[in-house]
Every structure is written in C-alpha cells, then in structure tokens.
Image (cartoon, rainbow, N blue to C red; front, side, top):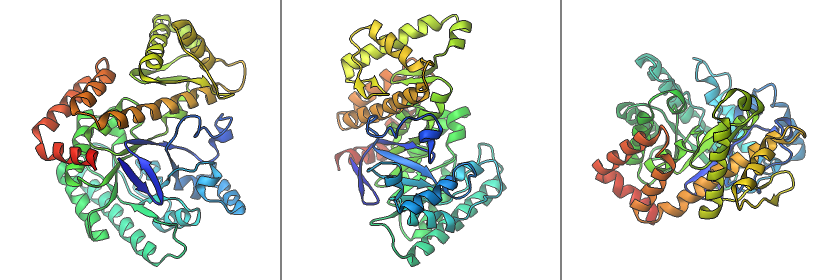
Length: 403
C-alpha cells in the first residue's frame, strides 16, 4: 500500500535507513548508497543537527548551500527527521527543546518530523513512566501549537506523535494524550520504547505492543523505532507496522558484521577465522544461502565500489563475494558491507510488500521460512496465535492490504 510522508509517496511496508549527517565520508562510505541499495526512505536525527558536537557543524554547511536535507544527502525520496530522543533514554532531562527540533525540520525542509518524545526503559517505575509520558504529551502539544503559527511550512509537512508503553493500559493512556493534543486520531504515529525490549527484553512484549497499537489505530501509518534486525522487522511488519527504521546497516558494518535474508547477522573477520572453530562452516552456509537467494528470489549483489553486477551462479562465486566484503587491503571494506547490509534490509521489505498482498498463508509461510531456524521462531508462533484469537486485528490488517 502507498502511504504519504509529507509530499512524497512511500510503498509500505518499508525501512527508513537511519543515517547520521556526514557518515559519507566520515564513517567509511565512499558515496551515498541510496540508489544502489534501492533505499526508499531515510531517517535523520535532529540531535545531530542541533547538539551533537561531532556533527552539528554540518548544519551551517547545509544552510550555506541553501539545500533541503534530502538535497544535502542526495536523496529524492521521503526524509523524516527524528527528534533524537533515544539519546536521552537513560536521562531524566533532555538537552534539546521541542521548538528547536521543529524549527530545524521546517528550516531544512524535512518531509516529516517526529515529536520530541521521552522514551523509557523496561521495568521503569510507574512514577518515571508517568513523568516521561507527561513530558512527551507537553512536547506534542507545544510542537502542534508552534506549527500552527509557523510560516514557510514544506508542502504537506507531517508531525509524527509517538506512543510509548509496554502494556495496553499505558498505550491507551498515551493515545488518549495524543488525541487530546491533536484533537483526533493521528494519521501517522510512531511507537517508541521498543529498542531495549527488541535488543535484550521480551520479544513477545514487542509483538503485543505493535499488535495493540494496530488494533487501536487500524487506519494509521504506524512506524516502529529502532527495529534494527532484518529478522525482527519481519515480526513488526507481520504485527501491523508500516515502517521501521534501522542504523544497523552501517553500525554493524564497522564491526565486520554481514546481513543476509534468512541468515543471522554474522561477523566475518580474520580474528573470527582464528578463534571460531565453526568459521569455515559459517562461510559455506552463508554462501549457500546467498546462492539460493540469487537463484530463487531475485537477490542481487554487486561490486559496491564500482556498482558493477556480481553474478553468483555457484558457491565458489558466493565465497569470492564474501571475501570481497571482508577485504582490508583497500579502504572500502566498511562501505562494501554497509551497502550490502542496507540492500539486504530493503530487499526483505520489498519481499514483504510483494507477499503481504497475497493470501495470508503465503505471507505467513514466507515469514516462517525466514525465522524457523532462529530464536524468533517461537515469537512468530506467538504472533500468529495472537492474530488468530483477535478477529478485529485480522480484519483491520486485511483492510489495510486491500486499500
């Protein structure tokens, strides 16, 4: 289905590539990878533009050029500006203001801007949760009022409120606050405070949260923040998310990790080769999965330096490609892995777009094929049972697909 991000169309489900200003060339990228990786949308961070001492200097350069954020990063698709609140997850206070976030979004012509929210970690106390929900509500209301008085607003600019909660009661309270602030149900909404759960907490709670929000808002565009695994994002899409974002594509590349659909993100390095007795087996399994994906599903790889096609007709060619990703003789090894990983994320989202419109069992079989040998298998089974028990959720999902 097509959603709108500002004045741009976005086919969903989709992945926002989370990107830090000037990671090209500071983080090892040789060029902006959007076109070669089939990237559909990009998420930037207001904190990086306002307060991050390593990156805020580039804001002056963008102003000097008179460019919009998309122009500066050479991207023509939807650009959303996150508030950067995740940087303050462990802090009671936030060092940037909601007004500053909205100002920079409007000035640099983002297509959408996320409300300055205040996420909370799992097992936060009731008082802490209430305080952070209150801060998020106050920022939402303040940014809406400021937007109403603003001039030179980009066409169809959107402000995204954010819901936080790890149970139905808290989510309902957060949604009530959003409705109070904007006077209606939100057309686009973010779901926050999921990252700690996704990384180290209960994956079933993640399923519960996304499914609950979809039931509460059957027609809204739902965005889930920081669902950084190509496996985990499949669960998010299954439970009703339209979009997710991830910085894993580049962060993992710096630590020599490579992502492949249906295969755990795996570290391939000289050190791993010397210390992991299963390293050779991992290489062959990776190569076999790559050959399968290329032959059966249309996965394609390339020389990420020159953008020339890299045919993978057999395991030997796949192993040669893996060596190319890990080669440290030149300066491009991070760039190569980052491009590969980002393409893998976008490929999975494209496969979901293709299959979610087909009969439900086909879509479920696809998700199962990706997760059956991973720790997410039982979580997916839980999600399937949850959907089967909830007819309104099933109906709303089917309506979303057919619109």
